[in-house]
Length: 367
Ligand SMILES: Cc1ncc(COP(=O)(O)O)c(C=O)c1O
Image (cartoon, rainbow, N blue to C red):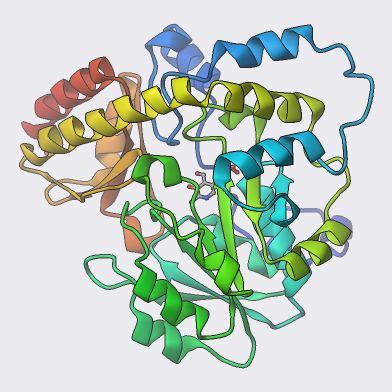
């Protein structure tokens, strides 16, 4: 959209240069445009938990009666519960308004103008999108053809200005993990290594124990995926103590709402129930993978998370995504050059898999 001259002068060039980023369309808007019920939309584009969260969250939020008070800026009770759940010291945990906010907070605390952030791609788009807003530079380093980290290329890309390296494990969207050996090599670079474990519960493997040994490592986690709380925006990070002290200084004091803090307690009271839905998703991931593999125009990649990346080997990925959207099935398509020929499909309920697979078979005639 054209911007009036007078306003243009007031906006930072890095903001004017930024592409609008919209990861998805609200489910209500999709339902309205297709004239169907929200419950009939098959939403497989943002890696949410299709089973939702535990009823205890609704109960806890309905019976809470101090919404007129600001939340605890120390997030004490919720952090104690997270410490117990994650097996990490309370003092090293900071909660964010989603893991997304913690990504910004790390950049805010580390970047001076011109400092660099290394981003092995393809990966979660936010890592490369945010550094310019903090006057930093995102340096993209391609992964290997099988999406493993290219450590030689990462080491070669390191400069005196490199402050942060983001790696997700499992990686979004490729679904593969960072190994311990890869992590140790990354840690030895001396940069701050942010290991984003947003999908940890679906993989069951963590690199968290390394945070006790190395003071240049952060682990990020979220309640958006496994715990079905994407709408409440609840993430946490496990930081070296000395870095945590700096982040407390730059964090907005009331970044996590009282509703969010209460929801953490309710969710962790019922973690076993939620782990059951994680198990169901893991089983369904295997079935979805096998079904996708049967289609002669898709090549699915094995995944440790709650989504499967597929290379479109015949036909056009964007066209397929649009055709599915027209019948109320949402999958993720990318405009970035590294992922233009790919679709990412969130693991849904078995009946959603069935509808998706039938639609893809019908499309196979046309691509
Ligand atoms: C790798 C990764 N990190 C972080 C996030 C954001 O998590 P949150 O919802 O807690 O902001 C996502 C969400 O898609 C993700 O894929």
